[in-house]
Amino acid sequence: SLPHRPMAVTMSQNQSYWASINAEIDAHLKQAIPLRPPREVFEPMRHLAFAAPQNNAPALCVAACELVGGHRDQATAAASALHLMHAASFAHEQLPLTDRPRPTSRPNTHHSYGPNIELLIPDGMMPFGFELLVKSDDPAQNNSGRILRVTTEIARAVGSQGMVDGQYHELECPQSDDNGWIEHVSKKKEGGFYACGAACGAILGGGSEEEIEKLRRFGLYVGMIQGMLHGVGRNEKGLAKVVEELRNLALKELEEFNGEKVEEIASFVKD
Amino acid sequence: SLPHRPMAVTMSQNQSYWASINAEIDAHLKQAIPLRPPREVFEPMRHLAFAAPQNNAPALCVAACELVGGHRDQATAAASALHLMHAASFAHEQLPLTDRPRPTSRPNTHHSYGPNIELLIPDGMMPFGFELLVKSDDPAQNNSGRILRVTTEIARAVGSQGMVDGQYHELECPQSDDNGWIEHVSKKKEGGFYACGAACGAILGGGSEEEIEKLRRFGLYVGMIQGMLHGVGRNEKGLAKVVEELRNLALKELEEFNGEKVEEIASFVKD
Image 1 (tube, rainbow over the protein chains, first blue to last red):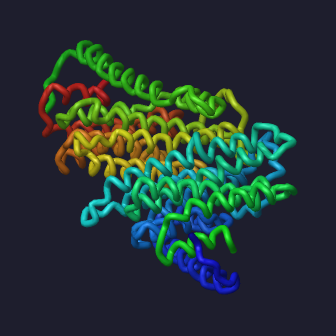
Image 2: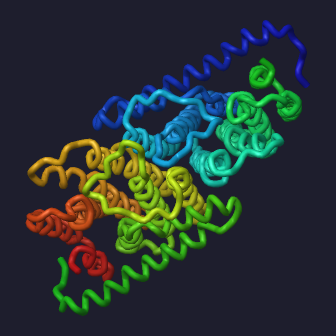
Image 3: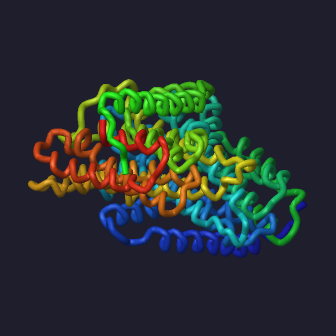
């Protein structure tokens, strides 16, 4: 179980942990999205990749990899792929569609490009994410099986049983009075995506099946918290109790892990 | 080189060859896109997957696999993935975007769903295509390396250096007077996609590097022909000479292949 420490210390230490992970993912992405021809396609891709709001599923992927004893480098490509999926999905959410009412759950964004570009470029970012991931296949590491498994995990999480299902409900289903709607959308959108990030990190780091499933649930709970605090539940009162329950469920999943990294990853829901 | 035979015989025989391949890809897709929950997501996915106009890159993938001595089943999943990419891309091309002029090179389509759905569902179809492909990884066949390679091929062909580049030029670059614009768009859109289909089939069927590259070029030429006859060049006169040159280049790539399948695949540009 987790040792108790003064909060201030935990925070400053762990902020630098997450910051260092995010800096590595950013560097990997900057290097991976070159400013090469066709520039008129890659330049907006690079812009849209970094214009999306912060999403912590990629960082969680790296942290989960380290928690199970893997090296950070083993998860950087998958984390970058996850970021690209998030950024592509975000850009499409902002598209000005004819006859499309803007859901109140979504903030307004500034558009740097015309709608053709903001439709088209994300269609290139998704496959590019898969390409980055598959390129991290390394015969020397004999990790093809893990890469293939992670490809399936990410495809499912961003696809029709994951993020697309959440977005569908956000757009097309009327919001109910109780918090059930917020829970469903948060679970499918952020929950499934963070669960995927954590599970992928554990797979790539060589975690056991039990560790992978524990971290998947940890990701689900922390993702749902994100959705409730910063996503569809953003303007909703009365979610504090649900969030607190999810936080406890998340921390419970970490109980059987050991080592210095446990506190780091736990700080995700404690700070 | 290719034996000469009466055209009527060639056609009827080869039509049944392509028809049988397309029937298998269709059956694979119908079985792969189940009518399962969330139905409101999978039902339009199934619709949009089959609403797209015929594209022959998937069939070419299967034919290339057979040409190099592989079994049809080795390429069906990749062919289905290619079809999903094509259908997703087509659905996004039809989206009614605010402030988006409809390019004259594109026909009007009937919309069965609202714009939210026609934006969102293709975002699920692309990852689903990758999922289908990766699921065809079979430890018994020890084909992980081939599957990973084909994943990269498809990601590149549908991404920013391939189809997205072609679509970008179609939408955002003014059409020039000569046929250079049509050639560029046809090369990037259909050319790159058919080249990918043929190369993927050859990879999955166990072709040599030389065979893979020959079939990639064959695909490029036949794809460009498709673009010129049925894509951006559809309404253009005066392409007959270019098309004839491409046809000859395509057939030249087949000269060193042997076996009964050579005539089948050659019929792609002869009928």
